[in-house]
Image 1 (cartoon, protein in one colour):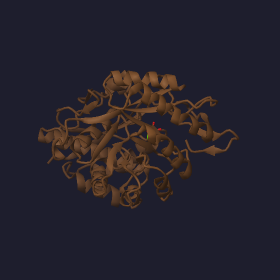
Image 2 (cartoon, protein in one colour):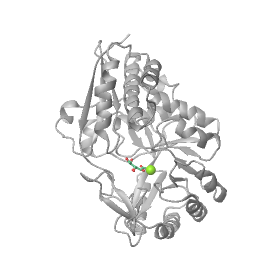
Image 3 (cartoon, protein in one colour):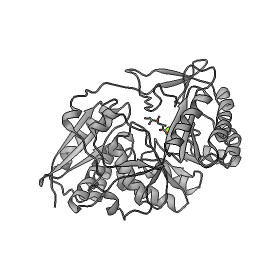
Image 4 (cartoon, protein in one colour):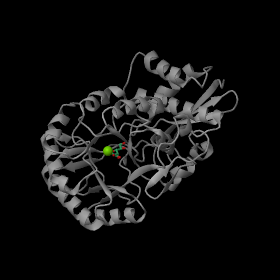
Length: 403
Ligand code: CS2
Ligand code: MG
């Protein structure tokens, strides 16, 4: 058995902040896990370094489920984004180690491939409808079969989802939270026009997605769903905040637009009622924020009973380690739906050499043993952590709103 003898935490900033755990075994085998919680990075680094790593030393790295239960039940304080991200990092690292010892890519340990690749969606965004359509056409030319559309709202100086850089959208942009402005009325007018223009320019053989980012009330979300229905959206994401999950019942009463939710969920308990009541179509919980491969498989198995499919979060704050884990999971899970893919910068990719790749609208984890991703710790050491916060969002009268 590979015995855990050490675990190192690296906090680095190759273009943006990432926290990475590396677990080391007595036979020299190592495994990596992503532990990045955007804007709250050091909390997870401390949770791991101060409270988890000491409990790992001496354990059998092959006992993935037992270690998961030990960290979850053993802490007494269950769930929460910090805890579940820390557990996820350990879980990913242990799957990586098991794959390396077995001489197999992780997806083979999860039952093997059930599809040729994971269909991904890219992000087309722009300050105007025309800019967004131009970006979407570029994605289509690159082979993407699914594209998320976000555009600036006329009259608003800044809007969620519209990046400064066309290809490397990065919302965590300031040492203290920057402030965005929001108008639901203006927003609800522009999005249907965006989708109409997109269908005219891109045709019907491409999936179009949209992220509301928790900004609407349930009845407003119902209206948006109805207005987008003629353009057949693949999904409407985070239409309303999900603390009150009955809100989704109200949305469902008004629209057949498919609903996706869950990028900020961290356990099966956040997903359970929405799935069992068939109030959503796609569950966006991810390996890194929802307890790792071990826990995400459990969520997916529950979802499969209700024809809910996966649509895992994959923004740039999920490191290449999380992306690799997501692709092993996605390739092997029966009810995969789609995977989000926001490209990392060249700096990020250099710090995290990886085997996964994109071709023809799909991604594949590659056939390297384990997760097929590593961290170059020497290179990582050249990029110093700097606090970077996500923005906050206010209505035009100054009221703090959901971002
Ligand atoms: C977004 C993210 O990718 C998405 O769907 O909602 O960009 C999200 O805002 C960030 O990942 C937050 O860390
Ligand atoms: Mg989102």
